[in-house]
Amino acid sequence: MACSRKEERKAVTSTCVKLSAMTWEEIYRDRGLRWELIESRTSKDGSRIYSIRVTRKVRAVALRNGNILRLLSLHPDHDSAQ
Image (spheres, rainbow, N blue to C red):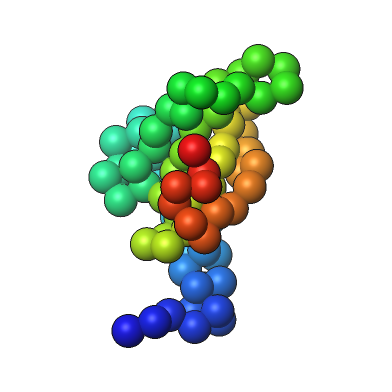
């Protein structure tokens, strides 16, 4: 069954709330989030960039800046996040 845009937005928001309550170790270990290094890319300053599952359909490109998680972009197609 297809998810509506409204349901998908709620799921993205729910994941953001979940992330804000987690430690870095919890984020790294969470099987649902699937924190993965994107080996083929780095940020403008040379920082490592990661892919994280936000919902079943949406992945985000993210980076860690100290204790801050920056979501750089959202991708409704998982493969486009690489």
